Image: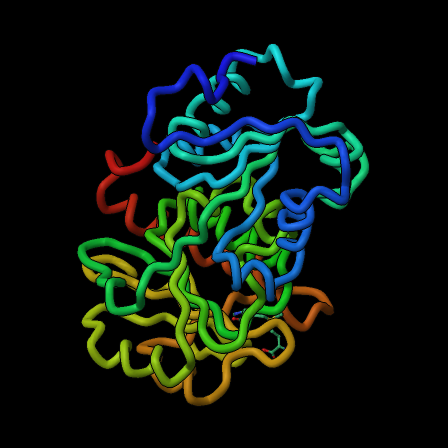
Length: 288
Ligand code: SAM
Protein backbone atom coordinates (compact mmCIF):
# COMPACT_ATOMS: atom_id res chain seq x y z
CA UNK A 1 0.00 0.00 0.00
CA UNK A 2 0.97 3.63 -0.47
CA UNK A 3 1.98 4.52 3.10
CA UNK A 4 4.70 2.84 5.09
CA UNK A 5 6.12 3.97 8.37
CA UNK A 6 9.61 4.04 6.99
CA UNK A 7 8.51 6.46 4.24
CA UNK A 8 7.27 9.04 6.71
CA UNK A 9 9.27 11.88 8.23
CA UNK A 10 10.30 11.42 11.86
CA UNK A 11 7.96 12.83 14.50
CA UNK A 12 4.25 12.28 14.95
CA UNK A 13 3.77 9.34 12.63
CA UNK A 14 1.68 6.25 13.02
CA UNK A 15 2.10 2.72 11.89
CA UNK A 16 0.76 0.19 9.41
CA UNK A 17 0.13 -3.33 10.68
CA UNK A 18 -1.23 -6.45 9.11
CA UNK A 19 -3.59 -8.39 11.34
CA UNK A 20 -5.27 -11.68 10.65
CA UNK A 21 -6.05 -12.95 14.15
CA UNK A 22 -9.05 -12.10 16.28
CA UNK A 23 -6.79 -12.66 19.28
CA UNK A 24 -4.63 -9.67 18.33
CA UNK A 25 -4.79 -7.16 21.24
CA UNK A 26 -5.45 -4.23 18.88
CA UNK A 27 -8.42 -6.07 17.42
CA UNK A 28 -9.63 -6.98 20.90
CA UNK A 29 -9.53 -3.32 21.94
CA UNK A 30 -11.51 -2.26 18.89
CA UNK A 31 -14.06 -5.03 19.35
CA UNK A 32 -14.52 -3.90 22.95
CA UNK A 33 -15.86 -0.59 21.59
CA UNK A 34 -19.17 -2.40 21.09
CA UNK A 35 -19.62 -1.91 24.85
CA UNK A 36 -20.35 1.52 26.31
CA UNK A 37 -18.05 0.88 29.26
CA UNK A 38 -15.06 0.55 26.93
CA UNK A 39 -16.14 3.41 24.69
CA UNK A 40 -16.25 5.61 27.79
CA UNK A 41 -12.91 4.29 29.04
CA UNK A 42 -11.22 4.80 25.68
CA UNK A 43 -13.13 7.97 24.76
CA UNK A 44 -13.47 6.47 21.32
CA UNK A 45 -15.97 4.99 18.90
CA UNK A 46 -16.13 3.05 15.66
CA UNK A 47 -17.55 4.38 12.40
CA UNK A 48 -17.87 2.26 9.28
CA UNK A 49 -17.53 3.14 5.62
CA UNK A 50 -14.89 4.84 3.49
CA UNK A 51 -16.95 7.94 2.69
CA UNK A 52 -17.76 8.43 6.34
CA UNK A 53 -14.12 8.09 7.37
CA UNK A 54 -12.97 10.54 4.70
CA UNK A 55 -15.69 13.04 5.67
CA UNK A 56 -14.66 12.73 9.32
CA UNK A 57 -11.02 13.38 8.47
CA UNK A 58 -12.04 16.38 6.36
CA UNK A 59 -14.03 17.72 9.32
CA UNK A 60 -10.98 17.45 11.56
CA UNK A 61 -11.97 14.47 13.72
CA UNK A 62 -9.03 12.66 15.33
CA UNK A 63 -8.57 9.18 14.00
CA UNK A 64 -6.81 6.60 16.14
CA UNK A 65 -7.06 3.57 13.93
CA UNK A 66 -8.04 3.03 10.32
CA UNK A 67 -9.11 -0.53 9.59
CA UNK A 68 -8.87 -1.64 5.98
CA UNK A 69 -9.95 -4.93 4.46
CA UNK A 70 -7.20 -6.32 2.30
CA UNK A 71 -9.60 -6.14 -0.64
CA UNK A 72 -9.66 -2.34 -0.34
CA UNK A 73 -5.90 -2.13 -0.92
CA UNK A 74 -5.25 -0.44 -4.23
CA UNK A 75 -8.29 1.80 -3.82
CA UNK A 76 -6.84 5.30 -4.18
CA UNK A 77 -9.28 6.92 -1.74
CA UNK A 78 -8.61 4.26 0.92
CA UNK A 79 -4.86 4.62 0.41
CA UNK A 80 -5.11 8.37 0.85
CA UNK A 81 -7.13 7.91 4.05
CA UNK A 82 -4.43 5.50 5.26
CA UNK A 83 -1.70 8.02 4.50
CA UNK A 84 -3.62 10.73 6.39
CA UNK A 85 -4.10 8.39 9.35
CA UNK A 86 -0.40 7.60 9.54
CA UNK A 87 0.52 11.26 9.15
CA UNK A 88 -1.83 12.11 12.03
CA UNK A 89 -0.11 9.59 14.27
CA UNK A 90 -2.77 6.91 13.98
CA UNK A 91 -2.47 3.24 13.21
CA UNK A 92 -3.57 1.54 10.00
CA UNK A 93 -4.64 -2.07 10.31
CA UNK A 94 -4.82 -4.20 7.21
CA UNK A 95 -7.19 -6.98 8.16
CA UNK A 96 -8.93 -9.99 6.69
CA UNK A 97 -12.66 -9.67 5.98
CA UNK A 98 -13.26 -12.13 8.81
CA UNK A 99 -11.57 -9.77 11.27
CA UNK A 100 -13.46 -6.78 9.85
CA UNK A 101 -16.76 -8.65 10.18
CA UNK A 102 -15.94 -9.48 13.81
CA UNK A 103 -15.06 -5.83 14.52
CA UNK A 104 -18.23 -4.48 12.91
CA UNK A 105 -20.24 -7.38 14.36
CA UNK A 106 -22.00 -8.17 11.15
CA UNK A 107 -21.78 -10.18 7.95
CA UNK A 108 -20.82 -8.26 4.82
CA UNK A 109 -19.16 -5.41 6.69
CA UNK A 110 -18.00 -2.25 4.96
CA UNK A 111 -14.42 -2.54 3.70
CA UNK A 112 -13.19 0.39 5.78
CA UNK A 113 -13.80 1.49 9.35
CA UNK A 114 -12.22 4.04 11.63
CA UNK A 115 -11.78 4.42 15.37
CA UNK A 116 -12.23 8.10 16.26
CA UNK A 117 -11.99 10.12 19.44
CA UNK A 118 -15.35 11.07 20.90
CA UNK A 119 -16.25 14.75 20.97
CA UNK A 120 -18.67 16.35 23.39
CA UNK A 121 -19.74 19.97 23.38
CA UNK A 122 -19.88 21.40 26.89
CA UNK A 123 -23.35 22.70 27.74
CA UNK A 124 -21.89 26.04 28.78
CA UNK A 125 -20.61 26.42 25.21
CA UNK A 126 -24.08 25.95 23.74
CA UNK A 127 -25.06 29.55 23.09
CA UNK A 128 -27.72 29.63 20.40
CA UNK A 129 -27.95 32.98 18.63
CA UNK A 130 -29.82 34.51 15.70
CA UNK A 131 -31.93 31.91 13.95
CA UNK A 132 -30.08 28.92 15.47
CA UNK A 133 -32.06 25.78 16.23
CA UNK A 134 -30.96 23.15 18.76
CA UNK A 135 -32.77 19.93 19.57
CA UNK A 136 -32.97 18.75 23.19
CA UNK A 137 -33.93 15.12 23.75
CA UNK A 138 -35.26 13.99 27.10
CA UNK A 139 -33.96 10.51 28.04
CA UNK A 140 -33.94 9.20 24.47
CA UNK A 141 -33.65 5.42 24.68
CA UNK A 142 -33.62 4.04 21.20
CA UNK A 143 -30.31 4.24 19.27
CA UNK A 144 -32.16 4.28 15.94
CA UNK A 145 -34.25 7.25 17.08
CA UNK A 146 -31.20 9.15 18.32
CA UNK A 147 -29.26 8.46 15.12
CA UNK A 148 -32.22 9.51 12.98
CA UNK A 149 -32.68 12.73 14.98
CA UNK A 150 -28.98 13.59 14.57
CA UNK A 151 -29.22 12.90 10.82
CA UNK A 152 -32.38 14.99 10.53
CA UNK A 153 -30.88 17.82 12.59
CA UNK A 154 -27.97 17.83 10.14
CA UNK A 155 -30.30 17.82 7.12
CA UNK A 156 -32.27 20.78 8.41
CA UNK A 157 -29.22 22.81 9.40
CA UNK A 158 -29.82 22.64 13.15
CA UNK A 159 -26.79 23.59 15.22
CA UNK A 160 -26.69 20.60 17.55
CA UNK A 161 -28.37 18.17 19.91
CA UNK A 162 -28.52 18.29 23.70
CA UNK A 163 -29.05 14.96 25.45
CA UNK A 164 -30.96 15.47 28.68
CA UNK A 165 -30.89 12.90 31.48
CA UNK A 166 -29.98 9.27 31.08
CA UNK A 167 -29.93 8.63 27.34
CA UNK A 168 -28.70 6.05 24.89
CA UNK A 169 -25.10 6.58 23.76
CA UNK A 170 -24.65 8.65 20.57
CA UNK A 171 -21.39 6.76 20.01
CA UNK A 172 -22.86 3.24 20.04
CA UNK A 173 -22.49 1.26 16.81
CA UNK A 174 -26.26 1.40 16.20
CA UNK A 175 -26.57 5.15 16.72
CA UNK A 176 -23.52 5.97 14.63
CA UNK A 177 -24.85 3.78 11.80
CA UNK A 178 -28.26 5.44 11.98
CA UNK A 179 -26.70 8.92 11.73
CA UNK A 180 -25.31 7.97 8.30
CA UNK A 181 -22.27 10.17 8.94
CA UNK A 182 -24.10 13.10 10.53
CA UNK A 183 -22.51 12.22 13.89
CA UNK A 184 -19.45 14.02 12.48
CA UNK A 185 -21.39 17.14 11.52
CA UNK A 186 -23.72 17.75 14.46
CA UNK A 187 -22.32 18.83 17.85
CA UNK A 188 -23.69 16.81 20.77
CA UNK A 189 -23.91 18.07 24.36
CA UNK A 190 -25.21 16.24 27.41
CA UNK A 191 -26.77 17.40 30.65
CA UNK A 192 -28.68 16.14 33.63
CA UNK A 193 -32.24 17.44 33.83
CA UNK A 194 -31.14 19.84 36.59
CA UNK A 195 -28.22 21.15 34.50
CA UNK A 196 -30.49 21.65 31.52
CA UNK A 197 -33.03 23.57 33.62
CA UNK A 198 -30.24 25.79 34.96
CA UNK A 199 -28.93 26.39 31.44
CA UNK A 200 -32.46 27.16 30.27
CA UNK A 201 -32.73 30.04 32.77
CA UNK A 202 -29.88 31.82 30.97
CA UNK A 203 -31.13 30.98 27.46
CA UNK A 204 -32.84 34.04 26.02
CA UNK A 205 -34.43 32.30 23.04
CA UNK A 206 -37.58 30.28 22.76
CA UNK A 207 -37.98 26.75 24.14
CA UNK A 208 -40.66 24.87 22.23
CA UNK A 209 -41.62 21.60 23.86
CA UNK A 210 -43.69 18.94 22.13
CA UNK A 211 -46.43 17.23 24.04
CA UNK A 212 -49.44 15.11 23.18
CA UNK A 213 -51.47 17.48 25.33
CA UNK A 214 -49.79 20.57 23.90
CA UNK A 215 -52.13 23.53 23.70
CA UNK A 216 -50.77 24.95 20.47
CA UNK A 217 -50.85 23.57 16.93
CA UNK A 218 -47.19 23.37 15.85
CA UNK A 219 -48.00 25.24 12.59
CA UNK A 220 -49.28 28.31 14.39
CA UNK A 221 -46.10 29.06 16.37
CA UNK A 222 -43.85 31.96 15.42
CA UNK A 223 -40.38 30.40 15.36
CA UNK A 224 -38.65 33.41 13.83
CA UNK A 225 -36.62 36.17 15.37
CA UNK A 226 -35.09 34.25 18.26
CA UNK A 227 -33.06 31.08 18.57
CA UNK A 228 -35.14 27.98 19.20
CA UNK A 229 -34.57 24.95 21.40
CA UNK A 230 -36.94 22.18 20.37
CA UNK A 231 -37.51 19.90 23.36
CA UNK A 232 -38.71 16.34 22.69
CA UNK A 233 -40.00 13.84 25.23
CA UNK A 234 -38.97 10.31 26.07
CA UNK A 235 -40.38 7.53 23.87
CA UNK A 236 -42.45 5.91 26.62
CA UNK A 237 -43.20 8.66 29.07
CA UNK A 238 -43.14 11.89 27.08
CA UNK A 239 -41.90 15.08 28.75
CA UNK A 240 -41.91 15.12 32.57
CA UNK A 241 -43.62 18.09 34.21
CA UNK A 242 -40.34 19.79 35.19
CA UNK A 243 -39.26 19.97 31.55
CA UNK A 244 -42.73 20.77 30.21
CA UNK A 245 -42.93 23.71 32.63
CA UNK A 246 -39.67 25.23 31.39
CA UNK A 247 -41.05 25.57 27.85
CA UNK A 248 -42.38 28.83 26.41
CA UNK A 249 -44.83 26.83 24.30
CA UNK A 250 -46.05 23.25 24.26
CA UNK A 251 -46.72 22.25 20.68
CA UNK A 252 -48.96 19.48 19.43
CA UNK A 253 -48.85 17.86 16.02
CA UNK A 254 -52.48 17.07 15.19
CA UNK A 255 -53.00 13.44 14.22
CA UNK A 256 -55.74 11.45 12.52
CA UNK A 257 -56.36 7.72 12.89
CA UNK A 258 -55.83 5.46 15.86
CA UNK A 259 -52.13 5.97 16.65
CA UNK A 260 -51.84 7.74 19.98
CA UNK A 261 -48.52 9.38 19.14
CA UNK A 262 -45.86 9.72 16.49
CA UNK A 263 -42.50 8.03 16.71
CA UNK A 264 -40.02 10.37 18.43
CA UNK A 265 -37.74 10.76 15.41
CA UNK A 266 -40.69 11.34 13.06
CA UNK A 267 -42.15 13.98 15.39
CA UNK A 268 -38.73 15.66 15.59
CA UNK A 269 -38.49 15.69 11.79
CA UNK A 270 -41.96 17.19 11.41
CA UNK A 271 -41.11 19.92 13.93
CA UNK A 272 -37.67 20.71 12.51
CA UNK A 273 -38.92 21.08 8.97
CA UNK A 274 -41.77 23.30 10.11
CA UNK A 275 -39.28 25.50 12.00
CA UNK A 276 -37.11 25.62 8.90
CA UNK A 277 -40.10 26.34 6.65
CA UNK A 278 -41.19 29.24 8.79
CA UNK A 279 -37.64 30.64 8.86
CA UNK A 280 -37.28 30.26 5.09
CA UNK A 281 -40.59 31.92 4.41
CA UNK A 282 -39.03 35.00 5.98
CA UNK A 283 -35.71 34.72 4.12
CA UNK A 284 -36.09 32.42 1.08
CA UNK A 285 -32.44 32.90 0.06
CA UNK A 286 -31.39 31.01 3.20
CA UNK A 287 -32.69 27.75 1.75
CA UNK A 288 -31.34 25.44 -0.91
N1 SAM B 1 -46.63 7.84 25.57
C1 SAM B 1 -45.84 9.00 25.32
C2 SAM B 1 -46.56 10.25 25.87
O1 SAM B 1 -47.55 10.09 26.52
O2 SAM B 1 -46.08 11.36 25.66
C3 SAM B 1 -45.56 9.10 23.84
C4 SAM B 1 -44.25 9.70 23.59
S1 SAM B 1 -43.92 9.95 21.89
C5 SAM B 1 -43.60 8.36 21.29
C6 SAM B 1 -42.30 10.66 22.02
C7 SAM B 1 -42.25 12.13 21.91
O3 SAM B 1 -42.53 12.52 20.56
C8 SAM B 1 -43.25 12.89 22.72
O4 SAM B 1 -42.83 13.06 24.06
C9 SAM B 1 -43.30 14.21 21.99
O5 SAM B 1 -42.14 14.96 22.30
C10 SAM B 1 -43.21 13.76 20.55
N2 SAM B 1 -44.51 13.54 19.93
C11 SAM B 1 -44.96 12.42 19.36
N3 SAM B 1 -46.18 12.61 18.81
C12 SAM B 1 -46.50 13.90 19.03
C13 SAM B 1 -47.62 14.73 18.68
N4 SAM B 1 -48.65 14.26 18.00
N5 SAM B 1 -47.59 16.01 19.07
C14 SAM B 1 -46.55 16.53 19.76
N6 SAM B 1 -45.46 15.79 20.10
C15 SAM B 1 -45.44 14.50 19.74
